[in-house]
Amino acid sequence: MPRDNIEMTLKGGQAYLDDMFSMNEDDTNDLNGSSEIANFFAGRKVLITGGSGFLGKLLVEKLLRSCPDIATLYMFMRTKKGKSPEERFKEHFDDIIFDRLKQERPYFKDKIVMVQADTSETDLGLSPESRERLKDTEIIFHGAATVRFDEKLRLAVNINIRGTKELLLFAKEMPNLKAFVHVSTAFSFCVLKFIEEKFYDPPMTTDNVLTLMELLNDDQLTVLTPTLLGEWPNTYAFTKAIAEDTVRQYSSGIPSCIVRPSIMIATAKEPICGWINNLYGPTGVAVGAAYGILRTLHCQKNLVADIIPADIVINNIIVAAWDTAQKQEIPRSITDANENKCTTTEEIPIYNSVSSVQKPVTWGDFMHQNAVNGLEIPSEKVFWYYMLILNRYKFMHNVCVVFLHLLPAAVIDTLAYLTGKKPILWNAYKKIHKFSAVISYFSTQQWRFKNDAVMSLWERLPPIDKQIFDFNIDDLDWETYYRYYIRGLRLYIAKDPMDTLDQGRIKYRKLKIAHYSLVTVVCLLVFWGLYTLINFLCTWLLSS
Image 1 (cartoon, rainbow, N blue to C red):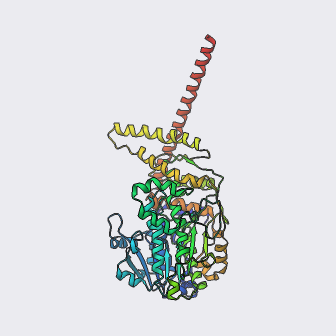
Image 2: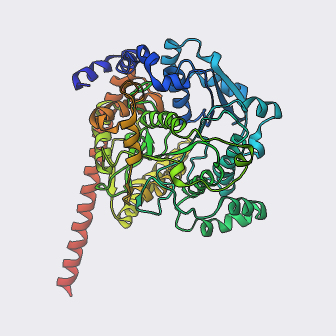
Image 3: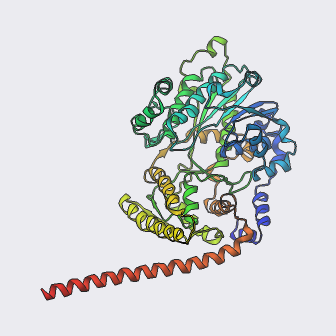
């Protein structure tokens, strides 16, 4: 989209939102009748786990909008933060990403059935009545997972591994099942530097890790976690690696596939460009830097950041389900369906949904574009002027942490305490440093991926479905994407409407003056200190 058109959208918040929606409106509604994928899902009963998460919301929205003749969409929902499944389900569709769906398919809720469940519990937390009802499921999208890198190992195992195993065993009781799609991560085997679309040996077997969870108490498990993880950097990658082997081991007789997205960030086009609702990964870096809080990052700017818009992943997932059902109509006897023999790699397609093969972007490019576009639309809520240093070396990063994070935090929190205000910056930086340590593993190393299966899937897609379910990363214009990405962060993360842009720019100009004034004063003090030291040494040497 031309820059002058984008700038026109900055005149008002509503005008901006209308533009974000309208740029994605096309004639795909008229094409649904001739879409092979929409026709495949017509009359089907679909089960989605993890439907309340970032990826799950987008998947629910896309299926109901682009496959309007789905018979039933079952959504797992659990109690969370004191809210019952019913309360959460009622609030679920208040999100702006469902506005387009409400307009185009006003009766979409009639197709949704909320099912109280919890993938971390035994038997998925399902009641006998719910289990019986779900046996007519034909398509399963398994996206439920804990994505916290620092999650306790027991909970990560229960959700990511045991939940996957129990869902697969339950799937064997579904006689009409056409496809089981397991959403993994491209970094499940991050201990390897070249990752192909195939299975790898897991760090532990599914049964061994589940047995270990039963034998060890929480204290013992905490002590042993680093040893168990071995080369894996966190419990998320560790458990997702094992979960892939769980699919291989327990999917006998089930048409299955695995989709491995890389680092998912905001949507590129659908249902609204630039939408995101979390601070994971690079998005947290972008927001922290834009607010003027994050000022240093351990990162090699010349390395590729394998980021990918979430809506591209969603389309890949949906098409993978369709293709799996088309290719794997496996005759299943009761005996075969209950044999937990390992399925061969060839029978379970794996799709590396990545950007680095076709549209690579470096960490330096990502940070630069964030800075350029962020300076155009500063939020009124910023804390300080933008300054982010990408440090290749850990030592230099730690030095910057002391002088750019810890010392300012100590000074400001002390002043806050003395004036009767609550000190918050020091604790905030403790969280930021924990987050930065997690990010640095991925921002200081390079991986290569193979995505032949993804590209082959794209080539097999009918022309009409290429328009409706576009997951061709070649079509993505990163420059345009970044403009909407940054604006999305302002709207959906900062919750700062575009109507406050003028106030944001005024505040930012003041912070810029304050920033460079402070830098000037610090530089003068440093030079004065050096001059004084040199003068003292010269005087001492001459006098001696």
